[in-house]
Length: 179
Image: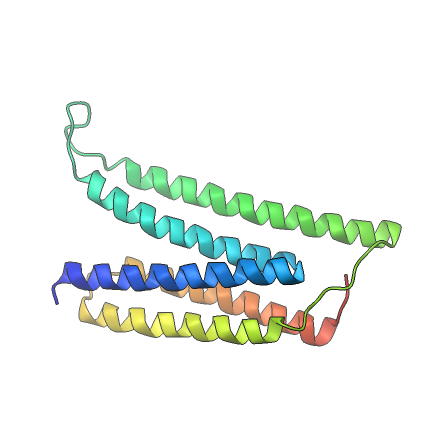
């Protein structure tokens, strides 16, 4: 396989796995109502959108125009800024939503029992998927040392997912059904 074929295969598989993780996280959020699952699902969705956008930008950035004779390379940092702002917006939304629920509970005594029963199974499944994705991308990385982006994205995803899954397991096992 050529370097381009390896990159394309890794990107397609990573994007599909991220899509599965995004759908599962969003589905679990709808079932349980846990804000952490909202963050988990939508962060993975941002990774899917980012992967598709990165492919489009990589195809466009080398093209030259009369206005940009050196190429459209400015799209790459613009994309990074947009992605960062989107991730921060999702995190702020999750923080505000969680804070509203906590304040409502502590100030007014209003709350609801959370359905945390499916969370441990979800956490284990997502952790296995992320580790599998990491192993796959590491093998692809070894095939071509020059391709670091896919590997680093996988590592960042693994770290975020493992941390969030551990937090969810901890919350469901030790905090019980608290609002």
